[in-house]
Picture: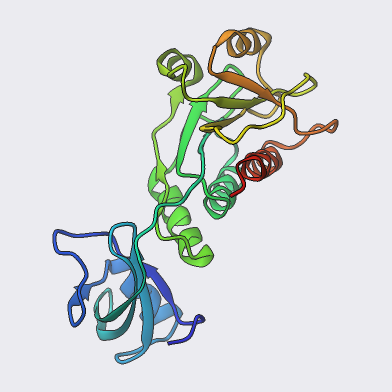
Length: 237
């Protein structure tokens, strides 16, 4: 078994993974192995999910969009990713997809799109974004795939946000605090930033802390990467 062998996320089913068990592959994974990776019966693969961990396996059957793998042994025990929730204003399609990919690689536990006063995009293809998150999890070797929630208004999210869950918000051209280890979530605004009303609402919320990302004005997707990196450094992850 090589670390370069295909690594596939197979969602947990009613039956836990076990040595010698044959596990069916989702149609998309079977198609990927056969038509993209040019693999066949007997080829080595690794399969994983958040409940069962990561397993060494081999392809037991593969035909068109159907396939299965034979499990040999558990290589990594189950472990949840230690990261933060990401609240972000939806961007144009390519930029939003980049946020999902980078966020997954940087340990985001859940994506929560929020609609702000200056949000330009309100429609998201959640199925497509879930595929991107899955591919990123396979590539970066985490054992879970982050959840992606449907969009909500920022106002509604803040109204329901618990005061004991520190939320760091990137507010352009405003002084910010140093990130602390107990950060639970990061909020990145839309292109053009938050409105003045939203800034005042954020600053008055007891759970919200302003996070400085430096003196330069960053693109929203760049701000995601910078903000997540700062919170990770503060927590020692």
